[in-house]
Length: 292
Ligand code: SAM
Image (cartoon, rainbow, N blue to C red; front, side, top):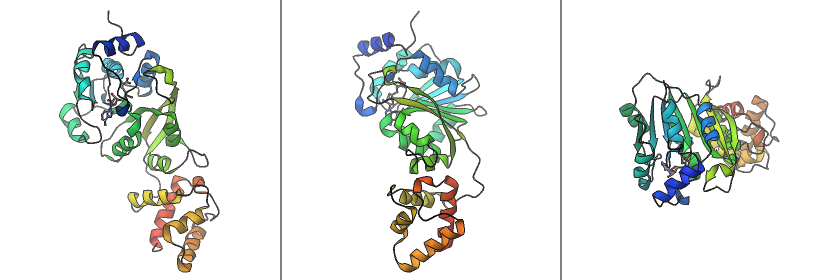
């Protein structure tokens, strides 16, 4: 019997057989730890009722574990050199479709409509290419695709930012952008030794699930995110300083800023990293209503 793809011996044999060397520029680090692979699939609770999207199947180690448990798997791989490899390594599974496209360019809703039977939970499970973790997540969260759960591996430092709560150093505009639309948690950490080749950094699995809309929503989400970025422009300075950076230093502007903060009961001297997502929503709306 052939060993599974996600083992050091089989991965090395596949790389040798196809004379492949992992492309750093595409973030190619292949998982070679079956325990980690199983835990990823468990974190997403993949069952035979689920349709699964994967990003970056590589040589197929995670795809194989997904194919064994899911109803159907669609995996987007940008590197066309990996297509013949995947055709070979995944030949035992008849429920996998590989799409040779850049995930940032792909029309996800269309592919989903064309390949999956409707009426089944849709899940996203991936060991992401780390160089584009943030754009991928922002694209996915901004798309109209309704994933029941998203379970993705990324570098630990980014995972910390996605899950950081106010007051923590890792808390910033990325934390707010993601936590505005999803609940986030770190499922578990993965050491760099679980890959061939080994990346320089350690990794973590992040689980994102639906969150209820906030009781008050921003009048415009895009404006809010611009505002949040402005608030974090100088993390070590006070909110007051950052707000002047955004709106200006004219006396009448300062007066309005002070008025809004007073109305909301938010101290001008607070550091931006202390503000909750709710605070950012309230501030966005209040400044808008005050003509700023
Ligand atoms: N899933 C495999 C595993 O766990 O062993 C490989 C994961 S590797 C970290 C990331 C994969 O994403 C690589 O196969 C790489 O070629 C692919 N990739 C990189 N950029 C991509 C993009 N823009 N769209 C789709 N796939 C991409």
